[in-house]
Image (cartoon, rainbow, N blue to C red; front, side, top):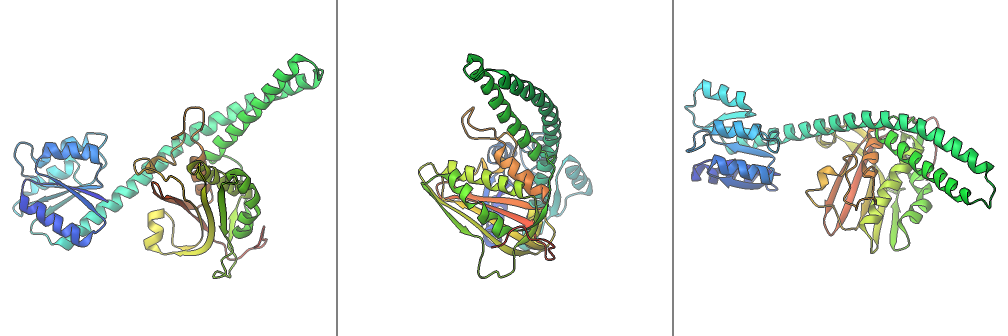
Length: 380
């Protein structure tokens, strides 16, 4: 996490530094003694929360809040006001009206300061998840509508071109051109199917499945996707987990998910490497379930790990965005990971990613577990 402290007092900045170093060991703190410098640093550094003094020369805290909240790059960064004990009630009201998220008056203990910082971080994460969901929902509605209409047009093109191809003699020069039209329509139909999956409008047929068997049954296909220079390791039937990994899933969608993540891993390992797919039972409590946006309970934990190039830190928040791709123009639609995200959400699950550039990437997927199966699709 990244924290920015804006205060003209060296003593206060040292106190903040000590408190954060003691209680938030994984946090990175940047400090500045000027409101103008703080705004510039916030625009470029993108901190997770800001600690701000009200009484500062040149630009006071009120003006700093005003500018931060009206700049798109910094508008959603939580701001904690920390000011003198004699601050008037009107100052508190004014700061909160301008957009401050919390107002603390000295003296304040290190523990109280850290508690407020943690609250602001939770609020920021929840707001980011909400904005991301709203953005995907809006794009999904648009993509789904376009896909349905486009699919109707493709049906006409494919029907007539196939009829013409059947009526064309095998040695006719028009035959090759017609075949190219038919093949192009098939590829276009595949793209509309991807759009429908992303928009969650694809009709699903969930059945009770044993996830170990489902993944194992897809092993040969995954090997063909990744090629001979990448080793595939499956840890799908852990001996330490005797209970079957049962969940309600649409088999074709889960296979699509595995294929997309396998392709993503392959592209990250052009010189070869290791791809590991593992499944296990997991029990999520409030502390672990809340960041994933899931209720506490039993889940199937599916992990897909590679030893590839990794994902840069600045790219990581964007990877599930539709049409986002780091590939060259014409070499990627940018729908692969957004489709994965859509499939997981359609199954009532969650997905997270951890990546270190130069080391590799791990996708963690949680699907609701089911304890009372009527039918088992596959078994280990």
